[in-house]
Length: 294
Image 1: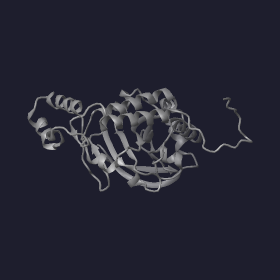
Image 2: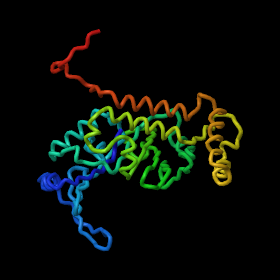
Image 3: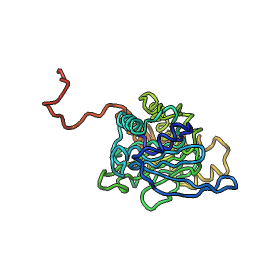
């Protein structure tokens, strides 16, 4: 469920302990302007995690999903239990006090396999709240919102990683602001070692999907609802509530068995699956520790 994270450490003792760990590999130097002064920054790495030392803090960033896979892809399901184990592994390697590792960037998502082509699904994503979806890249990818507070991303993961999945839709929330992370009840890496905190991420994904306007052209209703100009004109000329009222009317005309609702159910089922403990597909019966009684 969780992919990219960025944390900051401000405790000087912990910074020095992490920074001087011999497992880190020197990556290089860069310069960044702070007020009217240019400071030199040094970056080190371990696997796909990058450690950058500032004057008063240490930042660590990277995809913990890719870290878990030990290869640069996040096309498979990342169970919450595996995420927790990964964070604990990183904690052990660097002797981290997770309560002193503050979350400042976060990406969380689910991958699902819809019953329609992902390319068609993405094509018909029109708005998130009142922000239009844009297509900034060549492959099937859309994003709503460019601000640091919150971005909604939707794309075809199977185009990005064709060797790892097929017709896979990824729905993702990205934030670069601690304020939004705090609104989820998350503050430190320690929170992400507790299964209960992931309920907020699941609810967030479902709420963000609920705010999406998706054209469902499998339904026969007034064509105006499938015209982007209709929705643009409402936003330009209508009152504050007209967009939401027309969206409710549109969903009512689609009926309960509509594409938006079907995708929401899939997101919910996948999120609940990721909360379960992954059971290995291959079990060595000679070393098995437990028996299942039927």
